[in-house]
Amino acid sequence: PRILWTNFYDTTDASRQKDGGIGEGEYLMRITIPGYHQSQLFRIIVESGDPPKYPVVSIVHSLERLGYLHGEILWIDWCGGALPLSWASITAYSTDGFREVYTFSMDGVYEMWLPAGSYDFGLYHPGLGSKYFKAGLAVSWGSVNSISFIYD
Image (tube, rainbow, N blue to C red):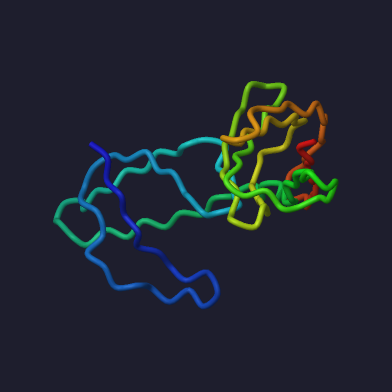
């Protein structure tokens, strides 16, 4: 069974948050923090021992900072002006098969977090159709990149 548990220690002052914790057993743990990547699940075992006591499990784990990508999606109107495009979605395609889909905000600005790799992009807009951009954008761990796209 899946258990979602959100108890944590504050990483700045190490003060414990009050919570009943999780029960005895064996767990696979995934840490989810926006903008970070956990390369593998890790196994923890919670036991109270004999005689029973309150177990404390401490975990120190390293996460990779994902690459941050942001930019604009523009379209060319009938007068030749470039305007922000709303209601479009972007898909990042990497050479290793990873695919991530995002939807733009109302002002045509997008942002996404990606694992290290080389990416091409696909755009879709209900009124303008699909478009593929072979960008070959190299994203590394912890990098900040910007790329904008124009539907013409």
